[in-house]
Image (cartoon, rainbow, N blue to C red; front, side, top):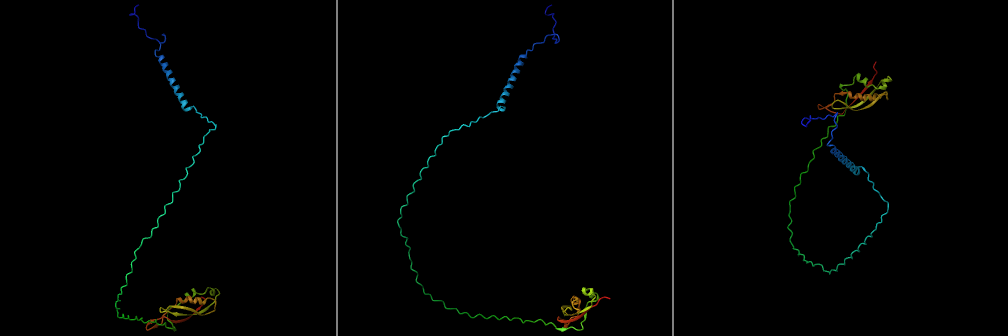
Length: 233
């Protein structure tokens, strides 16, 4: 049977022997190179980063040669004293003779006429206010006087509690408006029950027709009145 008649053989992995890997040696070499590079890198990192470095210290004394400092230079000598100066006389100042006085005749006195006297100011006459009319008001006419309710309102509390009756006489001055002012207690009966104080309070409720002079109301009239306090029945 010739080569031309030999049929083409196809590789069967089940019956044929395994093929030889042509690239096996190349892969092995590459693996060895990679492992070597990794080993070298790991060794470098270990030496430079991981491996501790210890420093040894010795306690041996070190001999040091001390150098003495140089002595400072001596101070410079003091400067020589200045030479004595020759005594020079003070400058001569010129003296001028004072001028001779000139006799000048004084001017003649000037006579001025005396100034006229100012007229003396005459003070205006002092007009004294009219003296208050001093008279006793009798038969007074009242514009207003205390009523029964006013008497009950100002009734002394102690006298009312003890059921005491009494009276008080007061003396006042009548103003130009008919009001009573400057009142004082003339007498009170019985005493020490407050009838006088009650009468003074009631005096503010009086209003009289004031006295007149030349048709004008004037102050100064004296008015006396007696106030009697009785308990309400």
